[in-house]
Image (cartoon, rainbow, N blue to C red; front, side, top):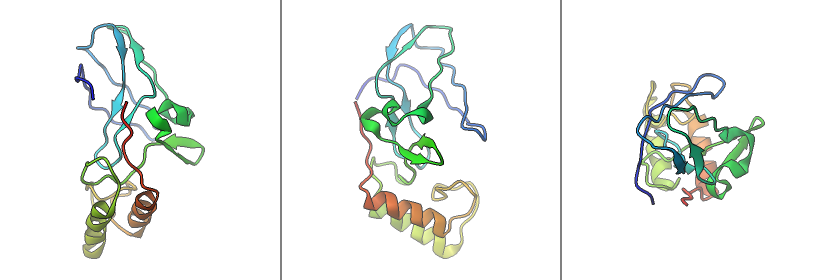
Length: 143
């Protein structure tokens, strides 16, 4: 719903930590938009103050209220973005489930869109996670 001021591609480590450098944004307040290859789009709950040239620290995992609309799920004591928006349309639904079912049927493996659990195999665990999120009606919540 806002103009993109800057963007960064990041990889998280095994502990969920990452660093993003926003070199084009001038000092000010900005929402942080998180887009992942097969997860629901998630936004920071409020604009974050960024100072040009400084590192911004933001911990999404510490509280559900860190995401706009509390759009996080608690897993193993950490708040996480919802996985399963395979086609990136803003909702986890039957279309996403169907994509995973097809790939389960052929035993697809590797770093693929339908591997929601990130274990490099598309199997029943991916399908189960997706079915649960679809049944819960998970959708993107935007500011």
